[in-house]
Image (cartoon, rainbow, N blue to C red):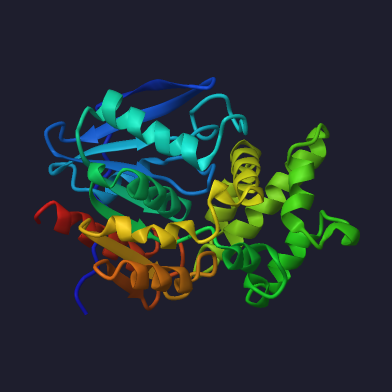
Amino acid sequence: MTDRRTLYPPIEPRESGMLDVGDGHALFWELSGNPDGKPVVFLHGGPGGGASPAHRRQFNPDKYNILVFDQRGCGRSTPYASLENNTTWHLVADLEQLRERVMKVEKWQVFGGSWGSTLALAYAETHPERVTELVLRGIFLFEQYELDWMYVEGGASQIYPDKFAEFLAPIPEAERGDMVEAYRKRLTGDDEAAKIEAAKAWSKWEGDIVTLLPSPGTIDHITDPKVAVAVARIENHYMANMGWFEPGQLLRDAHKLRGIPGVIVQGRHDSCTPPAAAWKLKQAWPEVDLQIVPDGGHLFSEPGITDGLVRATDRFAGL
């Protein structure tokens, strides 16, 4: 078997700052790599997850000019965990501001995993003329069956019944018919103790299903209240509103991606965003290179997923 690629060595940003995008929001951004390199924007998951130093390491720093940022309400962006003026279409508009005011380029590669793949597709279908390539992981299309897989008994709960029981635990039986709404009430309520309990339980459920093998470090990170509150509040807000998409919108408009080179790296055993969505996207966008990793789960840090993503960014850099 060919040696698997790993992340590039750690690098420090050469520049960082805050961009006022209006609506009371300011986004933290950082630029790394070669200022004259191929421009790429990295879109983190969640929604609400925030960026990390490892994200910039998926790109050859000699070949790429790398923009990593925290989306509205999360990470180092302000106001923290805010749901006001925080929708998919606000984020699509933010990307245009980042492109014009921070990166200052006409076109760029768009790279996104999990929720980041959703946002990348929404942006590319809105502004196809601005996208040189798409590199996507863990496809999520905001279809009802995907939400049901995550939050209704009978989906991921069939694989993780013990962990799903923990997800159910904070919610009284009478409210369990709509777990997204039940959590929304607690995550947006005035009871701070109930908010933190709900945030940790919501985030832990996701943390339990995103790795192929148990990862205590992932659970510790995602259930830290400083992380969990933003992840849970913003993610629940997006789920409750179906991402502000029309039913089937991303597949319906996939024809707008024609002519944009693309790679999808999808874990076969991804229990958070199973391969069915990636397969549907491939049918609607036949030119995309869909790579289903036989021993992959959801996270970019899993060996087979990292290998596919780094090979994709290298390919588009002409390596």
